[in-house]
Image (cartoon, rainbow, N blue to C red; front, side, top):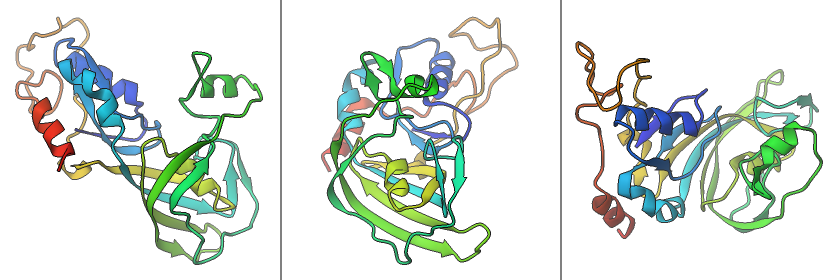
Length: 236
């Protein structure tokens, strides 16, 4: 369980874990956007075969949204347009099964290519809608600052739900912070930081002399969870 920091991609985290564990096969159970933080389940060795089971688990997020503006990507990295139109307070927050269209700036594949790559080339397209489930959608607080209005939300939802889309559909809002706090029974409070970047030129699997840290590169005792224990937790 890794607590991904902002600025790193999920692929970056997986690559660091792979390197720190000597090149073992690795994967993950659900992408986080680079600007997002929080829980990323990194699968190691035979655990990669359980990816579909892990990815199917419900997720919990906390997000802070800027109000009165829109973003072309639904996050701070897009083109921001200030509208001055604020969602009602309290807002109408949808729960249950809903139809949702993934954002074009997403990792969904179209003919084998990621949608965000096509969007960045300026291509025009629309992704098909999907049915997702929002179990809980709660406003935690709302800042009345008219110059920079913001609100925070906690969301529990099924796999495949795009929080950026949920926030954008509040009209007009976009995510400025996004943190995944849980995946199924796994909580970010039990996660550790990604391992530090390994030193160039050091053979994989070796412990460089004089370089040893509990949760950095070259883990001598990595915080691994046995696969059977993880799968048992899913049935509880």
